[in-house]
Image 1 (spheres, helix red, strand yellow):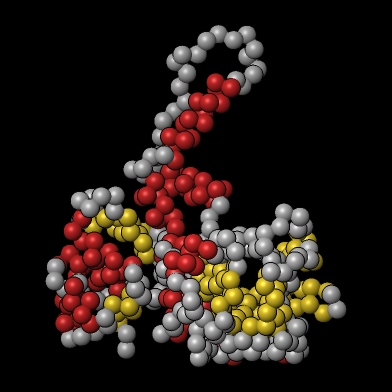
Image 2 (cartoon, one colour):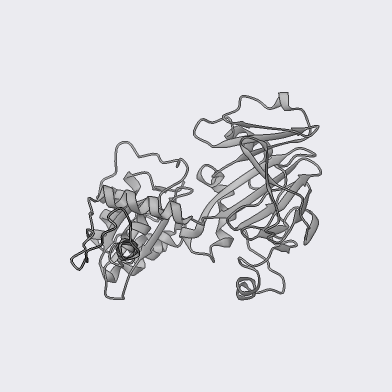
Length: 384
């Protein structure tokens, strides 16, 4: 298990001084770091149809980008390219363990683990992201430069699918070695160039844009046939300018929209389902045949341990201690009675349910039926 070492900083110090404020280099953030996967294993994932991957290459200033799946990498030579694989935590449990030390941030904010392998000179060019990211250096060395947000930076597209920025002033300029961690807040330009064959692991965080939130809310309203209130102008006064849209009209339209997003009865129900939907394919495999609840109970009584598939998003919401719990798993909502708070936490707070915790799920029939259904969906599984 990986343990985050912030040196003299506490987590509170980090959140107050750096989170979404300024970048930070954490030397030996993971002491005696061991790569959870090899470059060959990463390349193997990039051969798969269900795995999102891309390869970026720059030769003599000419940038190229290809998307996977790939057949082989020999044609790219031995320098100046990077292979990037998204959502490796969905497919490789040992690599998924790299996310766990960063779960001091709520589950719904964590996105995925992107892993890259770069040959000497490889990189994706200077760019910025609109989300937080922790970059962990694996094998090899990589030269990183990071700057502070700068409104004077211009976006450039050296390739139709590759967005970069103009040169920036670095506040961090370092050669990272295995176990070093770089925290980069949103909007900070950064550029990493591999010095030798190297692996990098990026733990990214979700930062939904207003547009995406409104689109998701609209989909929820349509799916649930929620019309909401209609425009009303019972107090309208006569106005000879019939072609005009008045300020009063706009005020009422704006109020309608504000009322819609201010509905705290619907807001958590929509947001929980929206934010727990997987962005990438899950390695979800239903058992065949499905288990009966009695079988699950027997296995758990005998000391079995349950694992959660990689990348599965789980969160819950409880308005008040005596309110029902809204449990959200992979975009689906499950309502639990108020006293089942411990059940929700066991499912959401860890990717593993140990022997002692498993006994909790056979103490009540409703819990047993719930965990049986989750196992039969292929979302939890018996660890060997």
